[in-house]
Amino acid sequence: MNILLTGASRGIGAAIARALAAPGRTILVNYLQNQAAAEAVAADVRSRGAEALVEQGDVRNEADLVRLAKRIGPVDALIHNAAIGVLKPYQKIRTAQWDLTMESSLRPFWLLTKLCTFNEGASVIGLSSLGSRQFTPGYAAMGAAKAGMEALTRQLAVEMAPRVRVNTVCGGLVRTDALNYFPESAKMMETAAKLTPLQRVGEPEDMANVVSLLLDPRASWITGQVIVADGGISII
Image (tube, rainbow, N blue to C red; front, side):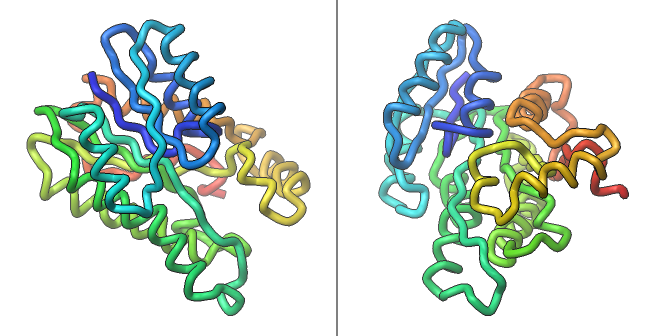
């Protein structure tokens, strides 16, 4: 199984790489800047019996996406996790910051899917968040990008059927370095844990586990879906 994973050097991406590592699998660990972190993830992948390729690439750059698509060969799983975004109220977002957010999340979900060659029965999986469907302070640009990914999931699922399944995992609050960019992140996590029926915020491994489930052959009847993994907070 060939797995192309964007944004794999830390956080949710790194957890996905580790969760999917198994004998007979090759995982392309894509990173933007931190090669040492990507190499550490690759070492973990290899320790679990899988092959690992480390490839720098900016998902906003079409030439880099072409190189990523060619590096691993026919793909069995394309997982788009990479995202860069701005956290500001809508009126303070500059045009360049808006474009940056769309170009790192929404556009490559479409473009890399277009550039890859897929094996029969392959999967495309996106990573989204609850800010795609409910208000989160400062999340106007990123929320719009993630909502676009969820809409594109449904479009691609029909256009790529029956050879390829397309789904997205939508997470609640997950404990990653990205939370450091939110004001009062510690208070936000404490409040979220209290409001969540399962009484905790998510961990990167929670998202990785859902990705693993979607790649299981027993999930072969699931496509075009946005799977919410949030401890139940969205139903409150």
